[in-house]
Image (cartoon, rainbow, N blue to C red; front, side, top):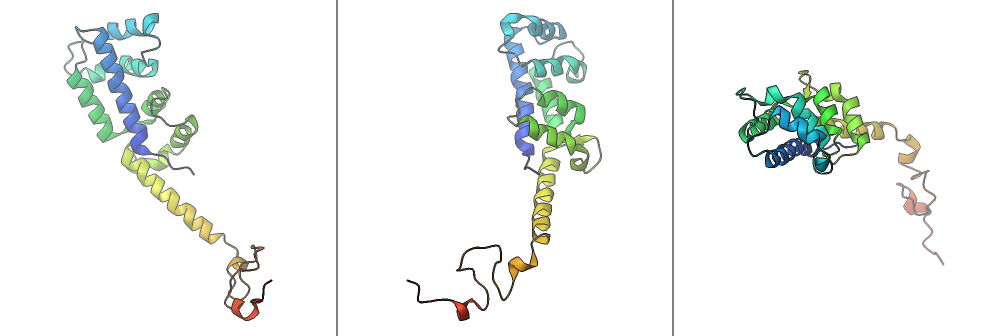
Length: 186
C-alpha cells in the first residue's frame, strides 16, 4: 500500500478550483456567470490556460457555489465553498471529477488507489473523505504493513544459536558466534 498524502491531494484540488475561478474572473471583470464559464470553456484562446476539469466542476456545481443566487460567483463564494469542502471533505464523485484534472500533483495510480479504498478511508461513513481521514488511513496501513512484515519473518532467521540463515556473510551473529569465530583471518 503506498502512502497517500491527503493534504497534498485535497490542497491541490482546492487550489485548482481557486486558480480556475481567478482565471475566469480575469476574463470576466463583471463577474463569473454560468454563461461566462461556458464561453471560456469553448473559446479556443483559453484552451491552454483554462483547466477544463475544474471549469466543468464550477459549471456543474454553479448553483451550489452561488449561495446568494444572484447568478454570479463572487470571490467570497468560491472561498467559502473551498473552505466548506476542506472541512467537510469530498464525495467519491467530486474526487473523481476534480482529481481527473491532474492538478493534485499525484499520479493516476495513487488517485485510483484512494478511490479504490474510499470506503475504508471514510471512517465516519458520511460519504466524504477529508485530509485527516486519508492521513489516518495511511498511518493504519503503514502500521499494518509493519505488523504483517513482523508476523511473516521466518523463525530460522532469528535463531538464537545459528545466526541469520538467510545471510551468506560469515560474520553473521548469534549468541554462540564468539565461540566459533575464526579470529586468525588471513
